[in-house]
Length: 119
Image (cartoon, rainbow, N blue to C red; front, side, top):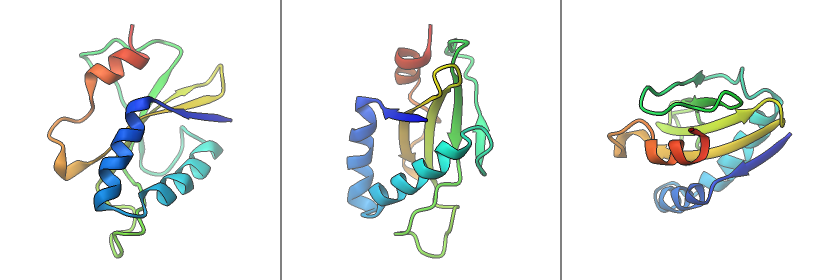
């Protein structure tokens, strides 16, 4: 299975890297597990946004249980969220957004979602 990430995703990682130095390593571990089954990963919820009509060929998910080594003692309850799209026909995963829940008031960047996955 192929994984890709949008340009803005790298900027998100750089922002989080200042606060969580292990985020890149944690993300690589997350990708390895995500490739096994993107639909049934623990803590993954399929999402739909009323504000954006999402293309029928992509399934959008939010991973709520993201393990961060830097946050010892919190396990998968780190507060870090990952939004990604799964293209079943292409067998491809596209990482759209990663953010720390406490810092962000809005659930997802709807403009980014619309640009990459919307109609």
